[in-house]
Each structure stands twice: as C-alpha cells, then as structure tokens.
Amino acid sequence: MNRNYILGHWILTLLSGPFILILINQLSNSSFGNVLGFFQIYPLMVIIGFMFSIPTYLLLIFIFICIEEKSIKNIYTKIFFILTVVIGIWATTAIIGGTISDNIAISYTIGAIIIGFFFKSKLKYEEKEIE
Image 1 (spheres, helix red, strand yellow):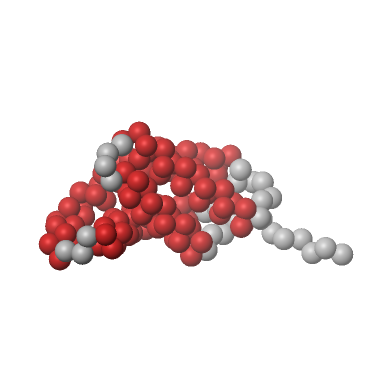
Image 2 (cartoon, one colour):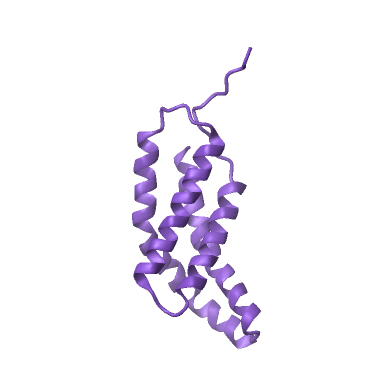
C-alpha cells in the first residue's frame, strides 16, 4: 500500500467525518441553526480529529512498512487497513467519552469505510497466473 493512499485516506476521513456527523444530527434534530453552528466549529473538529488520529495512523504506517515486501492481495490489505482504522476510531472515542461519542465514532467509521474502498492503492503485489 502506498503512503499516498494512507495520507489521502487520513485527510479525507478527517474532512468527511464532521459532515457525516452533522447529517446524523440533522436526522434527529432538524434545525437550521445547528447547521450554521456546525460550520463555525468545523475547523476545530478537523484539528481535534487530526490530533486524536495521529496514534492510529502512525501505527498503520509502521505496520505497512513492515509488510511492504510481502505478497498480500490488495483487497486483504485494504480490509486490514480499514479494520484497523475503525478499531482506532472506536478505541479513541471510548477513551475520550462524552455524550455524542457514539455518533462521532459512527460518522468517522462511515467515512473511513467509504473512502477506504473508494480510493485505489498500489501495491507491489503482482498476481501470478495459475496454469
């Protein structure tokens, strides 16, 4: 998995998570004031999300440096990557806690899964023809 995939996934998950969170909140409480308030705190949410996600993505970078030369199919690597990110999201929100921690975890999980399967990653793995 190339580092551009990891970096792109990280950035887009950080940017999309708060938008998904506001969509979840709008479904339960339809108020235009909530949406305007969201745009005021969006930059803060991205910065805080970045700080809390650093340990998970550093762990992922380390893992993928270790397995870079292995012949693992792209789909398995993506599934492992997304699963690790989702576990990191839920572990982080469990540690932080709060009244909306479940909604935060759900919104970032949705973003991570969609972005993870949407992006293409390039691996050094080449499929061999079966004779």
